[in-house]
Length: 264
Image (cartoon, rainbow, N blue to C red; front, side, top):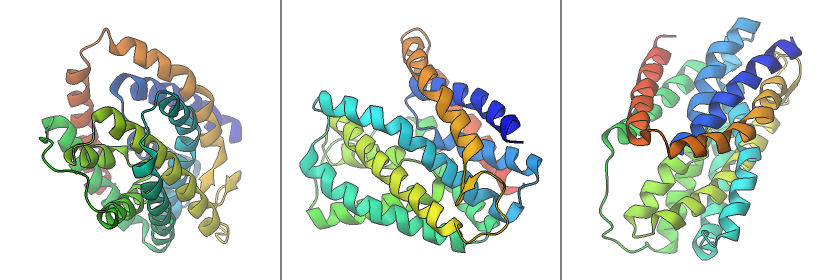
């Protein structure tokens, strides 16, 4: 079974990497629904499908975020005075989110994910633009924002960029620095979120073979093996294709996927 799942997610990794490079989106919004649909085909217990999907998604983001964080750091795109306190509280939020996810019923967890995806996809679909009118808030307000973002991101199996970038640009941060900040914070969220899911999953006795806590290694290794190869290809094609139109089509597709998850 290891080789079968690994082979499937080699292909999935190609798609995720290409779309991430083309549309500038994180892979979690795709990885989680795919895992939710694929895992039951291999007789994975339905009660733990969603935690496995979230954990594996976060673990895959760790690998892709490392190179992205380093690239943004070299290009001076990370305002560390803001990023450091945000990353610390987002780590706390991510671990807490993993713990809460372990306690919630799978159906409720799926509903939370699907609802949040609909809101994020609607934001992408409508191309909402917020005028930069406010300075960065007090450090305590940033900490509250960071904790909530880390918590929700862990519950969704995403890095949090889709939440953090619009928030930071609203508070007058340039898009370049907002993306850099979200990238390093995403690495922290993915790392601590995945670690939280690994620890909370260690006492589960119905996990599929080749699992590390809730992280499903065959799927993780398959995705990681190809996603980083196809991401640069997506970036290359971004200059040739109507990315805005494609992004709206993808957002509409995500809404349909999320709605379908409610009735799974």
